[in-house]
Image (cartoon, rainbow, N blue to C red; front, side, top):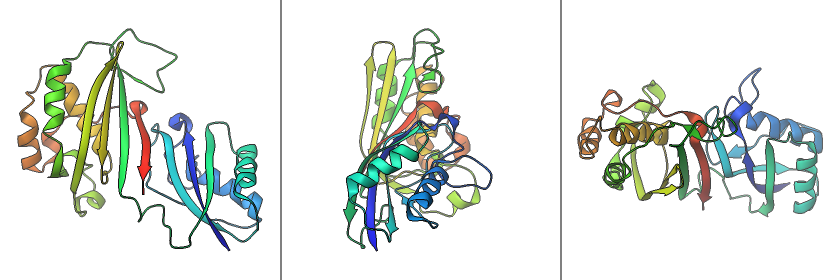
Length: 245
């Protein structure tokens, strides 16, 4: 038996998220269905983490075990020939059986893209169409308050599963830059809670609108209450950019 690590990209528009769900189209479901054709039996894959419906990935990582003897590049070609065209395997590597795509992660990087210009129907599934100007300086100031080690309870979902988790995470680097009419916000950290990036972005947008002050981020973190932060930003602007091991 060999263990393989795959790095892959996907357009999340037409998926019900990464994680396999009964009778729903998911990224995990499509890849496992394809691997079953290659291995001729059920294959379970484990990814670095899940992404929600409508969220995209530039470099997601997963691992799985196969009994058949196949070269890594031939496996990559076989997978891509069978997968739907909104998933693409960029790299396949044979790895140690000790490698774990989820538990060995030391960091992840996400980006969120906002269009401040005119509505663009072509980009509507891949860039959040905010279509108004935001105050970049106040948003950048607010973003810097999030750097470092914090309890991010205020920026995760309200469901019991997340509430019971340790919500302390380290954001080692953040950035916001303008690219024409687009704002690109980046987050590098040791891990991310469900909806964390989208909830942060929703709050940053309210800062950029002038509805909140940059310094409000400090209070929101201290309150540890999801209701104190802004609304959840739309999924289409979010990308898992990199996973680090």
